[in-house]
Image 1 (cartoon, rainbow, N blue to C red):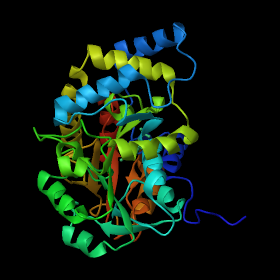
Image 2 (cartoon, rainbow, N blue to C red):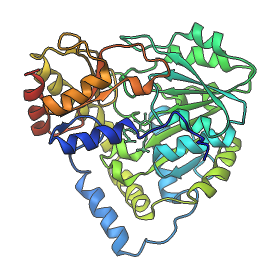
Image 3 (cartoon, helix red, strand yellow):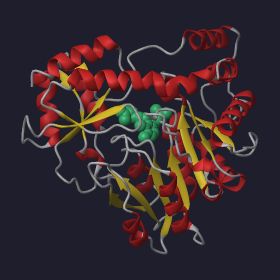
Length: 379
Ligand code: PMP
Ligand code: GLN
């Protein structure tokens, strides 16, 4: 059969996780914590199942959970949401991203994405018969050159997809960046899709510049987040999309036939836990800052050069002092010979610049970080 996604193979996350198992490597590749979600949250989901919350949830998500999301959004970003018309609970951010793209992007449209781009974006765009227009971020800080964005906008541009804190680079957008974006989309039909799954993981006292802080952008944006990142439970696959009423209505048309609704016990558990423990997400920056700083300290004696990490839970390193292999080949060599799995950046580019960077996940216990660092320092 003729393939609809000729460029797509198995994702680099799956490839590297399999290699890590095969070679008994410490896995700092695929991004997931190796520690458990908070005990009260685990108790709450077990209780929800024991109490019989095991059938379909409401399609748009459980009311008390949507109310908690609205409360959090107002508390953190000063943006009031109507839980009934502006919030939809999804099967992870992955579903939310796909549904947002499918809801508004038409055949022949263009969607601007910034490379390196999270790998689920482009296939979702291509499945609509649309085209991703790639704009490279500027290494080593990975900021956006807004003039390039202005130059890339055409009458076919339907969406601009941003991601802050950014995976894989850790870069964050500033309030000035959002002003630039607002000026570009003003008086156009362009919709913004803002992937904010790492919204609670920003460092050094910085504040996360959510699109929801920016009234003009919020009025034309989907904002996507993930409980997996915030509550250390990537395997529960729960996320949500926020958008104004008209966009949410279109989003829900797709969502109701993509999944209809999502995992009910987890929704009960998050509704309970968010209400009882709002401090969890407030403490997340310092929780991860300790890990970031510890990991940087541990690998400082190595030959890897550390890039800055303003947000997210990934450390980019430059391995030029160790090897001149390309990044995919270096990661394959490192997982086999060095005993540590990492993620190369090339798979996140349309036209890879050939930089010698790789991504290491530090959402790990001290023991895992220490074991990895010991090996990395020998390379
Ligand atoms: N966007 C980004 C930038 C991510 O890093 C991830 C998770 N790796 C997702 C979306 C998907 O999140 P989820 O696991 O909730 O589907
Ligand atoms: N988002 C995770 C990462 O960036 C991986 C998710 C996945 O495996 N699809 O590592």
